[in-house]
Length: 176
Image 1 (cartoon, rainbow, N blue to C red):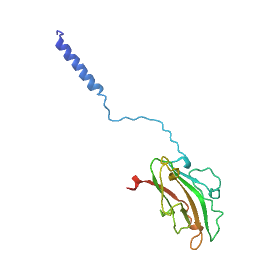
Image 2 (image 1 turned 90 degrees about the vertical axis):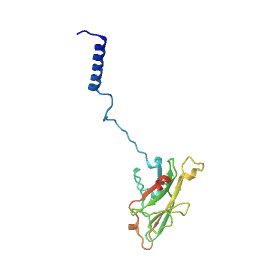
Image 3 (image 1 turned 180 degrees about the vertical axis):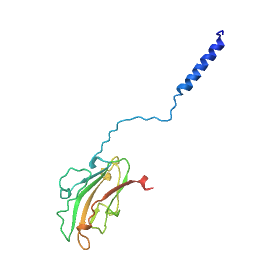
Image 4 (image 1 turned 30 degrees about the horizontal axis):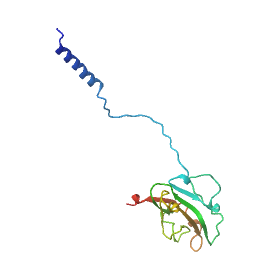
């Protein structure tokens, strides 16, 4: 067999096509790769929604657990209403304005003039707190200082104080 240009080109074309079919085109269906991930959390003061107990009387037993806001109720008078002004500060450290509510285990709001054994009040009589961002001109717009009231008179007693509360912050986008 005589080698000529046409035979050489056909042979090279066959080798290239066969090699491409055997080795693939470079596309893939799946890829799996292991990577390490490092996650860090921040305390309540530096979180997107900062929470801080301001009253030494309510600050608990001195434990350094930043996952729990603990109110020390040992000093409450029975059959009395006890109010702690400037007890809790909530700060919006996020980039969007938020509306804050505080709920008991039954998801009932505890902010404002509520008839509960434990309630929270702030500068406004509203049942929710609107917090801007710290980028806004008025620095106080992204913080709210709340009083906490324990009403152990009448039909309410220490057993009616919630074991836990939930502080809920929603953006306008979440409300729609």
